Amino acid sequence: MEKTMKISDFSAFSGVPSETIRYYERRGLLPAPARKPSNYRMYSKEDAARVRFLHHLQSLGLSLRQLVSLLSLCDEQEPLSVDDKSFVDAILEELDARRALSDRLETVLRELKAGQRCPDIAEKMFGGGLQ
Image (cartoon, rainbow, N blue to C red; front, top):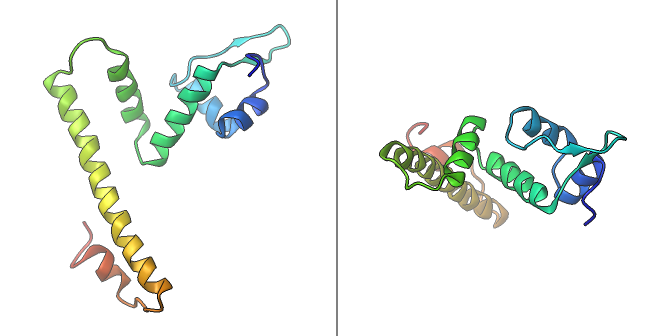
């Protein structure tokens, strides 16, 4: 990959929309790229990997605050503090809850595909109440 490319080319290469890339730059999640005299951004393969990483984590439901904190923890050389471990544990719990909900939805969809109706979909998904 040539290092210099327009944001539209970088977007196509990374699979992340241009506006999302600009947003990550504005929020400091992606360092502002160097620019050519023509004002085109200069991106690298590492930039593409970071953008994909951010985009996938966001699609898993992590907030921007969580992304910033997680990136900071990943960049640190020191062992995690007790607070850092609690932060990671909280994210793990959120992922477990999302996975469980996704699994319940998959079950309902497979039953629907097999011809079963699901008038009680809310009950199947959430039991006696929303969790």
